[in-house]
Image (cartoon, rainbow, N blue to C red; front, side, top):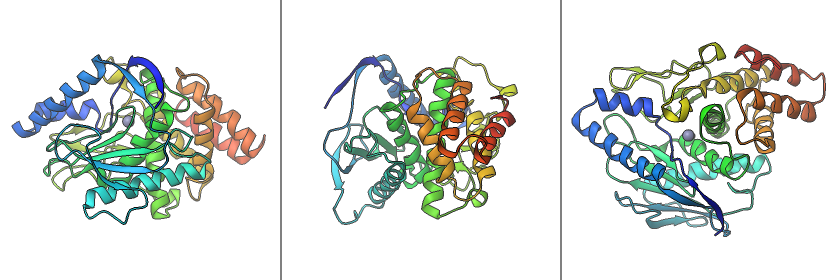
Length: 342
Ligand SMILES: [Zn+2]
């Protein structure tokens, strides 16, 4: 174990506060209770000055069960190399984690820390828990409440999203606030979407580009939590509210909540990636994903703005595909279409 020093530790939750707030206003008593429970837990993470500890220097992947409690990591259920687990949610967590690690391996990365360190997931976290999160050292998946949300460990994009927070923690360390925080969220969505597309062998043009699309119970009106293709359209539901994501800088949301709208303004770089991937065509995890990954790990400013990331992606694309390449043109055009000129 090694210590990255003390600082206030954000809890990287998959379900953003604007959805939780809407459910706590419009949901039934049971829903309000799990929202309040999760909020008090997130607050205790935020207010505590915690050591952020990187994963063990031992390779592999372990899945634990919290047995509906909150002790982490919990009881060991499966380790890499074991036969598939009997518990379907343990099996799902193991599969989606392996698919995420395989995507990053394609880009030359060895595990989340880049050094082959162990990856830890916990399922069956608390009772009716409707969220998944990266807490600085591991992924945690709630089982859902069976009325609004299904189990979070079922979703490949959730695992991909949460694990990308781990990669960011061990690479460019984007601050989880304002534009750099929204970039942190966006990169997590991008690689979450790419894990799904690679798993389904889908071309960019055939993909839904929705993250968390397999989370809602049938009663919910929505396709998922966020859409990279059409930010602001993922859901419109009497209990969850309306997806508030913008896709252009003209509609950038200035807010003090959600660390300055990290889950809201992420729609802008999300859409830039989608546009670029569509212009390049074919499989988005190949050229477009490799380009975004290289940009992410070479970023040298934890407080990078959208424009900083766009400029870095331009340097990366020229290095990867050459000056005057079509890919360079696509990168420039994609950022311009969301209101960022290079
Ligand atoms: Zn996140």
